[in-house]
Image 1 (tube, rainbow over the protein chains, first blue to last red):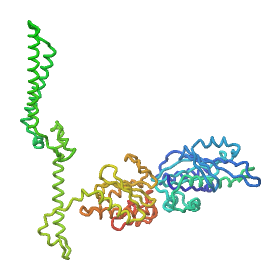
Image 2 (image 1 turned 60 degrees about the vertical axis):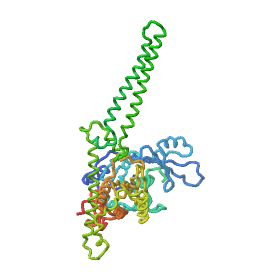
Image 3 (image 1 turned 180 degrees about the vertical axis):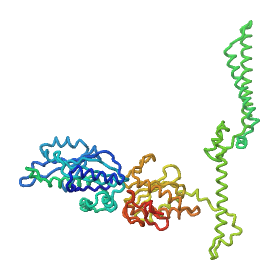
Image 4 (image 1 turned 90 degrees about the horizontal axis):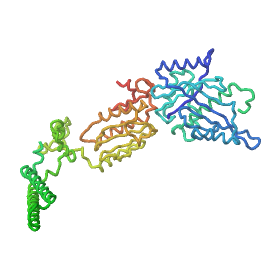
Length: 212
Length: 307
């Protein structure tokens, strides 16, 4: 439970996704990070049916995170979100008449989890229909819950192994109504992942996916 | 050692009383024995009854006599000294295995030694204060008569005074809140919440700080059993530094100044994540932000950068 920053690392020139991931692993291990197992984050898309005509149907995203294996998070893009327990998926099945699952749009990120002092680093391969599309890196600083306080610290850490791919302060924190100095919650992490998955989907547009 | 403590007990009367109890027991047994045996074999019924009743009366009278004797002796025995000098620890003196575990005698010696030490330390400090290098004349110079005066003990302060001092210090700093609890007896336990950065649990003994534990702002400190493994190394290091600080700020005669200095030092952690190290200029060193705060200047340093 700490401040998280999720960013996408571009695939290195002339290398495959797996090779870039291995390069990042090596850099982390040189720093002194310890491998601590695997992680996964996935996201399923649901269309809201029965909407008024002419309006594009709203998309509901249901996400899971291995950090909180007993929870499901449901959110609208840029809108409200909720956290529920794992039975939420079963509930969505029961709500078939209102929300339809877009089966081909499931995106997930799987990879290894490293721990360096109080930092948790998760490097994952973003895959959609089992084809690797990109690399996601999540850095969590467990000691602090205020993003405004520790952003410089996290940035310095990310620079040490990401080099030039270090991102700026995530928009989810700057867009908060209460400002940068309120405590984070798991919804912020999920919103960041959602943004990243959205970008990955747009990168290589599949034929027939005219929804987004 | 036991003789010295139980001065109020008359040992002679004590042993006589024990004998009297034995005599009483035997006479009561005789009564019940004679009842059990019943009437002895004699010629006539009246003869048997008379002898039986006479015997019974004799036995009861001997019981009465023994009981009176016992009561007389018990008044002579006296009570052991009621006021234990060490309250409940005085009950340790009842331990029969005195040579294997001489706890009570050692305890008494330890207390006497520490009391003497405190007395001597008070005398020494009042003497040394007079030899100050200040040139201004103050009322210390005329205390030739008052020299052996002992300073009042600061270990047994009334709880109301401690509460007042703590609440005054809490009001001094607007971004630091101090809550006072007394979970076990008179020692205060303070929960200091520093902005949204960290929480510190400070255990006190009257107005002296005994121990501190530092936790994260988001961690649950209320159901702590002290055995939870800390997994955020930053807080472990800040706890170490806080312990160093409470050992550094020492002033036995003015404990409220000590508490104030400690709180001022702790408050410098409000920008724990935002300040770079003064020496190397970076935020992180081996994954930790600058956790050391200099005791005089309150500047931030990494633990490895500080000396």
